Length: 113
Length: 113
DNA sequence: TCCTTAGTTCAAAATTCGTTGAACTATTGA
DNA sequence: TCAATAGTTCAACGAATTTTGAACTAAGGA
Image (tube, rainbow over all chains, first blue to last red):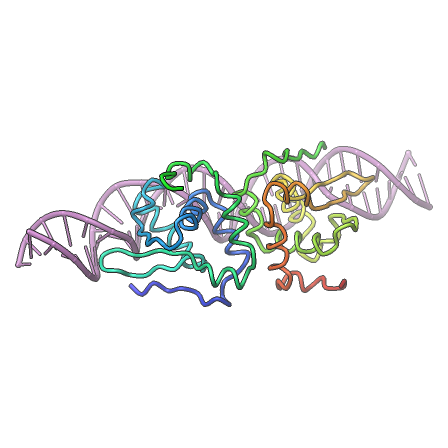
């Protein structure tokens, strides 16, 4: 129930890379980056997999320190931990998100700019 | 015997991240980056694992397009494919190598600058 | 030619990962 | 209170990954 997040200094580079080395999670992060500022709930990602499956991938992202998950009523709001990632691994998130721009899975959700 | 390498356009972001999301391979890349220009053979990395195990990890790095392996007599010379990586994923390698600078495994080999 | 050095390949074992459905919790709204 | 919505947890399963030792290849030097 408590949704544990690692502290910034507990975020490990190898783990961040391993967690992002998966098509589904990379697509989720690409989508979050492209819509930074907009509140995202788990349901936004149903194109990427089943509800159960997304719960698994979103937990991996949270546990790696890549995303923040806030409980809001019956849903959860998911966002990138951009500040923490940028200060811990300068330039990493930007280079990944840029390179992920036209990944096949992401194309499915290209309804924005 | 032939040591196949992927073409630059065959290098996949998710695969690069997955392959680097491993302590041993990340340490190898960190060491290669720190000694760019110096010819490296597999034996340089024996501190990171057994001969067999290194052969496995070095093959993964080569197959992902991260390193180049050239046969030279009885040994192989390993180098980063920096140009290919930089043009395909700008900034990625630098941010990873910078962030990997003081990774525990790498400390073992800190005999250089 | 024979030995050594450098590294690969193979098969087996151990581990970890991704996906699934069924059952569950918690919040909201009627 | 009752039902619907949003998401989690659990156990199970197959697939992929890592690690290991034993056997192998290929080049170089004595």
